[in-house]
Image 1 (cartoon, rainbow, N blue to C red):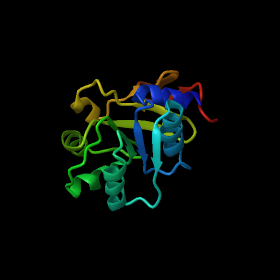
Image 2: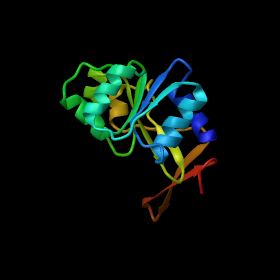
Image 3: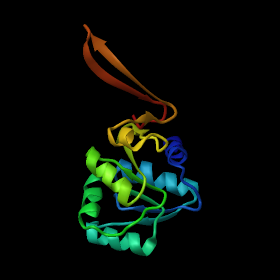
Image 4: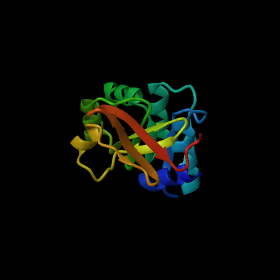
Length: 171
């Protein structure tokens, strides 16, 4: 629950938000990063199943979300079909790296976009910060959520192992 609260705070979710979640809630991203934080913030939530880009466009047009949780693949498809969509507050992507040019194009045409990094075992760990310039966010700049520590364990001056400590992980 603490991880969900931290996500809601970092992403600025609130009771006025309408959150569209085309990510399955049986995955960590859908449950821990999207559904639980939105629920705890009192947001209106629409869950989707059998997601494809046509269903997603229809859901955006009918539900008019202020926040969208999606994947880089769906971001790319939304840009390819060239619709006039707007997500007024925030789009959050996770599950894979998003190419810099797609990130920048989405931000120009549809709305603010943030990357999120996490794992099933550790929950959400880091996001880009919407106060940072778009080039930094598109380039992969992430900041740890509160309570999460990253360090690098190196041996003999060589690049080492990245260690992550989350005080509310699932292990």
